[in-house]
Image 1: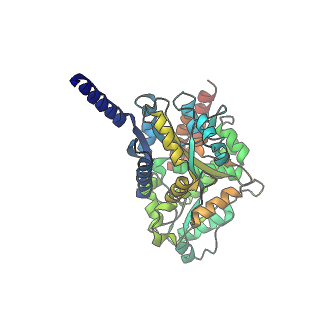
Image 2 (image 1 turned 120 degrees about the vertical axis):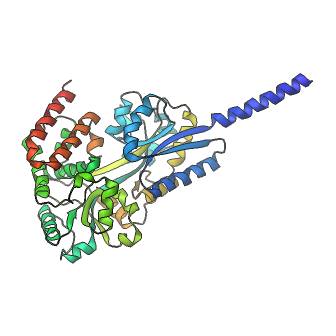
Image 3 (image 1 turned 180 degrees about the horizontal axis):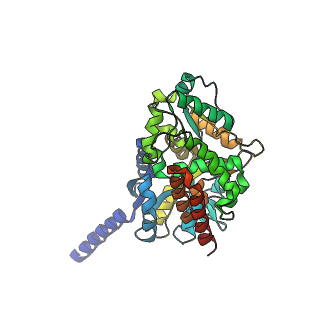
Length: 410
């Protein structure tokens, strides 16, 4: 009898221990700002309440650091859930067998309908590897009070109007444009939009696919349009010394009048500044070119080497509901990926939604999300070199063409 009691107690203890450890879910999350972290903390608390057998352990990592560390996690001690980018950025890891196939989850949870518009960037060779969480538009944030101060009436619709506005701001001693060039990717937004406006979506995507030489006259034309802004000192001084996080205060404090950026930064604008801040679509350069946009989407993925895939699937299904995705988009200043979710009653969100909804010329993801990683990294380094010294343009383009030939002619 004593032995049976001991055995029963031992089994109970082992069962309890297994329950405690089996339900641990490891999540690595990139974030920017207190509002994003607060959203995840609240969402995880709700998930744990709805799933008391699961304990979530989350690591919050600053976004630029996260980008560097992600490859190491995926190939070694992978967490159970990661947050990443759709499109080429996701497919890069799928091709290397590092992300879990989520096609069964798409069928089970009805995601083919609720995420219909983002199924393609979530897919690779007919299978889905991501849960889309949100997407955002790109445009030019600007200070209405600074525009009024120098006599600018209305938002520029054309490139000529934009240049004229920059000239007025510069003459008044106001830096026309803030940029976080130290991070490199904010510079890529300028290349994307000038290329989309000058050469169009089809050309842009061929360039992203490595099918067009960087020495092509049409590519140089994009940089030459950009060079006008640099030569006239329309960007804030020492733009390469700023990250996005250190450049955004220049706009908030009124030291710079404009910033080309994704709508997600609107969530970090103080309420007192929001009333003085507007958001306009990137101006038309060539009226013969159909207007195209960047519409970047983010997602959650389960690494192929995750240890707790069952609970990871429960977690991403929880986040993928209309209610949670609607709250995520509101906290992040973006648009919900789930088409059943409500769109936040926010002027920047509404303007971004209108821009993307009415785009006829095509929607790209973003420079480093549409291109193979190695080429994107070299391309953005080249942008920093060009921004530092525009006279080196031919050398920069020659180097990029050598890189393209090496990467795409293997």
